[in-house]
Amino acid sequence: MPDHIQDTSSLDNAPAFVITRVARLLRFDLWKLLEQSGTDLTPEQYFMLYRLHEGDGRSQIELADRVLVDRPNVTRLVDALEKKKLVRRAADDQDRRKTLVFLTQEGRRLIRKLLKIIIGTRKRIFAGVTQKEVDLLKSVLLRVEENIQKDL
Picture 1 (cartoon, helix red, strand yellow):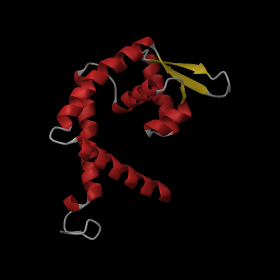
Picture 2: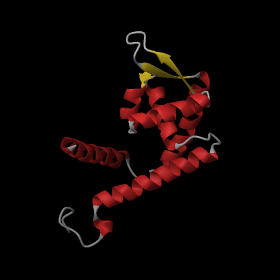
Picture 3: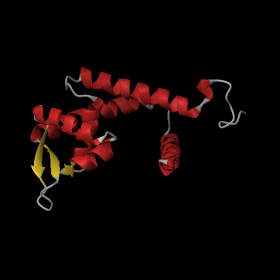
Picture 4: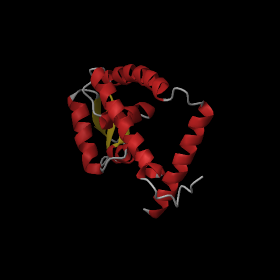
């Protein structure tokens, strides 16, 4: 069996390339799902709504870090979601320099609707993959992420 570090016989044998390819497909699949659900959301906007669903009232800086977008883009994303009446901004009571972002009622309704659709998508994507395999995959990917973060 070839060593995953030393094997340069084909790009398709490189784990990082496989991860990149799968990530691209997952993003495309999410884009298609959002389009078919009639939401007019981008994947980044969905991720932001999901993060707010996990914990409402986050600062824009925290959202940027948690959604993996740069800080100028988070403003653009929040602007778009605010225009769609899915989020609202408010000054932080503890630190008036901070702006917090909250889901609106419409934002909450939309994320609940999308989560039902996402669960069906997860079932399709992970068909034939056991929970143990998913747990192992996440564990390995988190370890790789940690290794990369150490060098950044």
